[in-house]
Length: 266
Ligand code: COA
Ligand code: NAP
Image 1 (cartoon, helix red, strand yellow):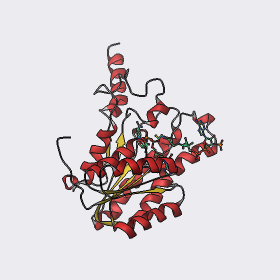
Image 2 (spheres, helix red, strand yellow):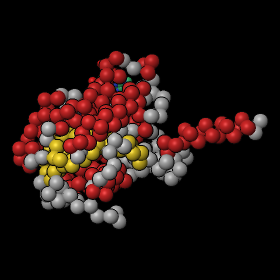
Image 3 (tube, protein in one colour):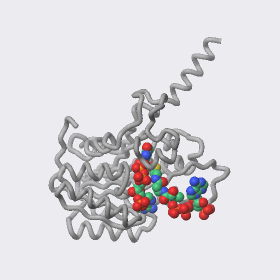
Image 4 (cartoon, rainbow, N blue to C red):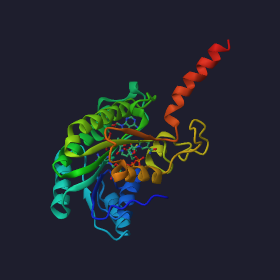
């Protein structure tokens, strides 16, 4: 990265931060000097993430926590705040996803994704609020499915649309405390569980034609945006849902334009 961000003396907490994109985000904050806590359901993921983050030499903590359970989220915050003090950077990125046609999705199948992505984000925001430092940066990890309808993603589209609106409302309510609340909407990111599930035949986007920049993104590109959004360089950005997707989420507009051209040429 050309720009160096310094988070020395800051505390960052990343829910769902033990694998994939969110771990890259946690890693970037640890590399930039922050004390970093990560939380997710599986002990093995927590242990591996903590070991990786420790390599940066700063303070690291890991919590086994299910964001669907408000008590386990609150306990993680209590421990962090007691040991380290107020939270300067809060990232909510826990999510679940699978391909399923709506007509084949059970009530529980729809609910599980809404519970993790949307209700879980509310739990993280609600439990975290009292532990945030003045001027804290809060980032929710959303997805372009929040505003682009995608087949076999009814559960995710609905949940992430809720995450986006939650982000905007909390920016309104918490702005007077100097707290900025934003969301990052990654496009398809190579080497992730998400793309292994949604694009199993091409999880790294080698044959991708529908992204203007011609490739999937990297975990580091999302982490860099999280660093920027939490830095003083972004001090007037709040309530924003920022795509980091190589321009890919405009492709549906291009498809409409193309249809218009075909129509006009008739
Ligand atoms: N198609 C249709 N329904 C599915 C499904 C699939 N591929 N996978 C799970 N479900 C349904 C289950 O059948 C169940 O519904 P039921 O009780 O009516 O049978 C419901 O979803 C809950 O499944 P369960 O396995 O009990 O949930 P869980 O809490 O153990 O796991 C998931 C949550 C399903 C989201 C799981 O995929 C997960 O842990 N994901 C985290 C990692 C991830 O998705 N990463 C990508 C992020 S982009
Ligand atoms: P991932 O590696 O599966 O990350 C999901 C993380 O959430 C894991 O650490 C998982 O760990 C944790 N988690 C899942 N359910 C949880 C729960 N109930 N409580 C607490 N933690 C839970 O997936 P990813 O592909 O990197 O995606 C990360 C984020 O980016 C998600 O918010 C996703 O929607 C978003 N996103 C991804 C892409 C992409 O291309 N991959 C695109 C757009 C948006 P445990 O299993 O240990 O709980």
